[in-house]
Length: 454
Image 1 (cartoon, helix red, strand yellow):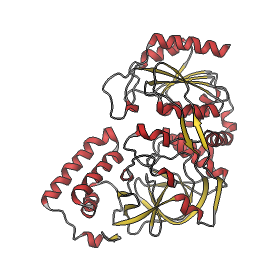
Image 2 (cartoon, helix red, strand yellow):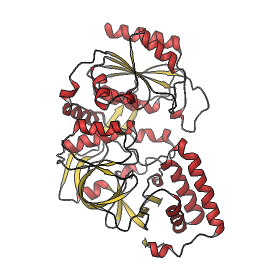
Image 3 (cartoon, one colour):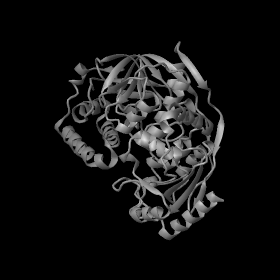
Image 4 (cartoon, one colour):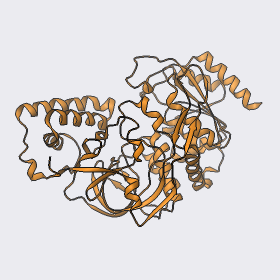
């Protein structure tokens, strides 16, 4: 295909009636899958199916008429570069640490069965750089420069697992060295901002584990008081966290999936490699590890920025961070387990009902935290020193080993309490529903709290 396919050239790529019928069928599948899989996931499958059946050019024609992504004016085939390479070439580049250090995450104490094992990783470079004339899109992790597309990877990471860059709203198709990117003809221009969006920026767990540590590293490296670029569908708690940690920064809201060109784009990478959407998450976990020492440094720095508002005590030393029904990875007998926790004087809290500051104050002053595994439990990164944390989970415990490495570095203590899968098994076992034995949970709390008193 040509290096650049404009809107005018696309007029010659009209779909036949049979092709249009096929596109309509696939679009119906997008709508059917979206509530379960999320639109980015279902639209990824839509793009992949169309490029395989119709070719790249006609698939782009179909995407322009079927996807709810604005400013799809042209298609370009771009070489893919690591952001680190582009960043090093800029006059304004500060490396916070070079990366390349080996580290391990050892398994936590597990009460019950599990498939946990020691995980090993290599730390990533942390830096702050100002990139010139970059086009970005809300909810996208791809940066578009003059003739390249860049995203957050280091060269050895690309082969870590089979990935799907088509999950990103800016990417139609990919191969090992190129992205076919869907782009605006003339994007609105912003003068300056720090890039704080991406494919998972709306998810609270990713926000806690990736976006906020990224912001912390940037500030440690000397980020000036430039605006922060965020997505319009970012939850209120995300914005509250920015108001808490960096009130000096203006927030610029990018319309959902819309593109802008930024003359001076400040950028820092994640502390862990995430890719886009692994084909097999179970095989990808070991490539998605944060270095404990650097992650803890970022979290401690964030806490130092909020030291005064976190100080007032809550009088609630025991917390059960509950998850509301209707979410994935359901603790099936959650009401019974919460009742057991109440019997041991745990305060049952639904964090999403509270402001971000209220959430952090609770975990900051708690001495014991119990939570079904999920984003709620990650709030415990902000707990005080020597806080004991217990997460409830099914018996697929390998993905949670990394949490132990991070909690240990933060001077916390982590235990996993596991139970069997309850209900249909999911394609990705991480999302299976499960049940915790009530009598076993009572015995665990009794012994766990007794150990703490001792």
